[in-house]
Length: 388
Image (cartoon, rainbow, N blue to C red; front, side, top):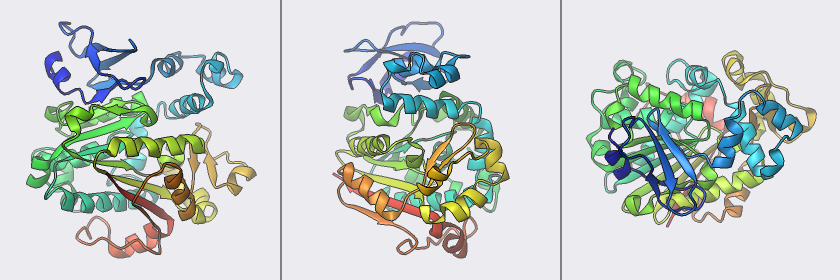
């Protein structure tokens, strides 16, 4: 893609101050590697390997220092230059290193992943698509996946705007109803944006988009971005005419290592949704944390990816799981999630659990009604809010 096209399609602003970004080397012969600079605070960022890297410079500095990063965290070497929240973000980024390919195969893949993860994700998929099906009939939409990992929703929604993409998923009897081309999506789903703080995850998502035949939309309608959700700024002028649907799925909220970061994530989702948008959040129910979470959900395939559990008794009592690779996962009650929505001052919300979730029909080949009720509802808590 030419630098001029990239500049036209630059849908993000500086994460440090919210001002526009500009390319420093528009006329570079290596247009797949471009530097960007903030027009106000002079912070620098990059575009390479088909994705934007918008990690704040001081976070990027910590992440890019290879070899001594674990010692820096353990001994707090130079870490006093970062706030507690920034240190926790660095820990999370470190924990996600070297797992993107395995994570897609074992946790995210719509047919190959472990059923404990796949059944839950399948319900999220049909819940979100059922919402979009109605919305897209009358509105143009920008979809934002807050915590996009290896590109799960970039691929799913990309398949619906491209007739010739994701052929193996379009042919598979289980996935075909979900991944089929839809002319309404093609017309009205204007932007599909994925934000993840792991550069490895974003790189893998860009590669998967090419593998699944979606490269023609890369950075034109589908945008994989490395960045921190809590300080992500959209180019509102370019996107204000669309209804934004901001999704934080599959426990991403619970992977934020303290309540302050959890509230900040929800506050950022609210900001991204304005002036008119929808927030959808999905987390795990702590009622099943000990009996299901520690024993079944983190089974062989998942443990191979995220590491063995090293949770302490105190963590168990607080429904917090940690693994040897540094993965953090806080499970919630319905009231817990409601309190976070209140702290983030999100209006017009509803929180649903097994007592209020309703089976979604029309996708029985993908996830049967009885599978929704048995395998998903007891461990799902979903929050939905209309923001204006």
